[in-house]
Image (cartoon, rainbow, N blue to C red; front, side, top):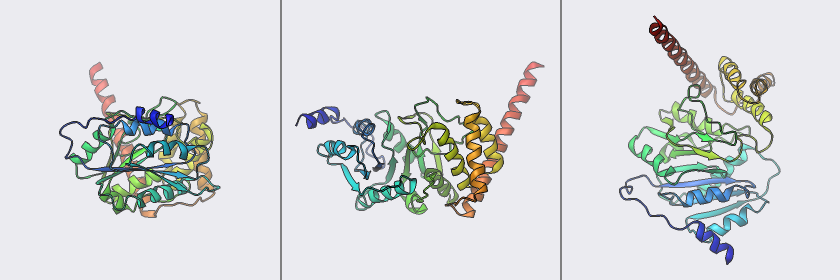
Length: 322
């Protein structure tokens, strides 16, 4: 009883502001595997939202650390939160994450939501986070996927001079339901990049995808380190970049940029090494040749635009010096 009282105190009801009834309705799915240390903060952040989801399915992917028991404290208080328990599995990979998301969506098949958000179990955000993103979806019918940047434990945020705002982080990807269904949801790629593949597929099918930098979410674990350290995460990222078809020139420049980040040089070398290793091994690619070509075309266009902006800036600087 004491534990339940603590949960009730932490998740007291919020007042819904006037004028938001026209926003799209939304539901959440969160795959969670041994997230007892971090998931409570995520639950509290969702419970504090100015616009709450119709339903939130938390899928415990064979957790053994007390995640299920912790989530159950909240499902006992909030009828809009549901825990789905999947059997334990020996391997930990992104294909399993996709299976967990699909299990969550199965529980939502009769829920009349307009927007579905796939939310990691280790992030937090401000109380108007989803209201902000729903407004973006409501105001632009071409938007298929939206999100915000994240800040992880290194206090780094993507440098959007080099990463297009068309990229939407998988920490919290918010889909228009029709877009999600049209792209067929996430691809069960064991190596990862499921968020990138989803956004690429959406754009290839004519949808717009957008990261709005007005807000951020906080990722309480360094991205990619759930199974290893920071350098190993860079090597794995390089392998993923090969799998989804990154252009070699783009990857080289990406690695050079990563060399400027701590740990300097090694970080970028690990990224490039992962890409080269995957290329030599002819690693499996979970995406079609058409999608890989689309990816490279976007990257070369972005690189050309970046060079043109730099040249224009240099020209303006020279004119000011005259």
